[in-house]
Image (cartoon, rainbow, N blue to C red; front, side, top):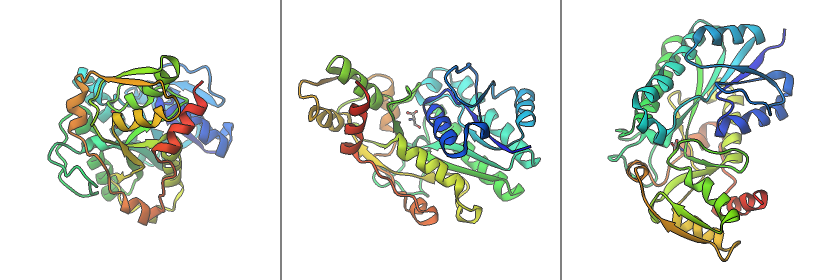
Length: 309
Ligand code: SER
C-alpha cells in the first residue's frame, strides 16, 4: 500500500491552501485532509479529527498508511488569549501526541508551524536573530516556544525528523484567517474591494513581519522536501518575506483603489502586536536549505486585488 501524507487542521487558513498545493504536486490519492469540521470542498480523502483524540488519530494513520504529517491544528494568538487553557491544551497536547507517534516510528516526518509569537517584548525588534532573547508574553507564544523545545528534544533524543518554520503573519486570498493578530492584513483587502474602507484593529505604525501565502507554501513544502541533513535547526527556522504597518499597506492599496480610506481603532490585539518583532533575520533558512522569498508588499497587493473581485 502506498504511503500518504496527512494534513491535520486542513480547514484552517494555511491548511486549505496547503492541501490544494500538496494535491497538485503529489496527486489527490496521496493526500489525506483532516479537521475537526468536515470540509466538503477537498478533492482528496477527508477524515474528521479532533487532534486531542489520539485513538482516532492512530486509526486514520493506520487506515491510510500515513508516513508524513503536516500538523497545523492550533488556536492562534488572539483566540488563545480569550481561551488560555484551551489554547495551551490544544497547541501542546496535539503536538506531543504526534511526536510520540514519531518516536514509536509510526510516522517518519512531520511539519509543525511555529511563529514570530515565540519572541517577546525583550527581543530585539529589528532583524530579530534566530538565537536571541525569547520571552513570549502570550499563551500562543508560550505554547509555540515550548513546542519548539519539544521538537528539538525529540529530534536530539529520539532522532525524529521534525521540521518547523516560525511563520510571520500570512496573507492569502483563498482562505480566511482565524483568530490571529495579523488577520487585519487579509481583511483589509476584502473590505477595500467591498466597502472601499477599513477600520483597523491595530494602530497605523504597527510594523510586523508578514509573508504572502504562496511564499509560505513554497517554504513549507520546500523544507519538507530537502534531505534531512540540510535541516540543521530542529526547533524552528526564522523566515522572512516583508515587513509593513497598516499605514504602509493602506498606501499600497490606494495605488489601486484611490478612494480607499482607513481608520484605526486598536483593541486587545494591539499589545500582542507590540510584543512581536518588526523584521526577521532568516539567514539560516537561506543558507541551510536555500530559502528565498518572492513577494514584496507591492507584488502581494497587486496579486491579492487581482484575485479578490
Ligand atoms: N499570524 C499569527 C497570529 O497572528 C502569528 O503566528 O496569531
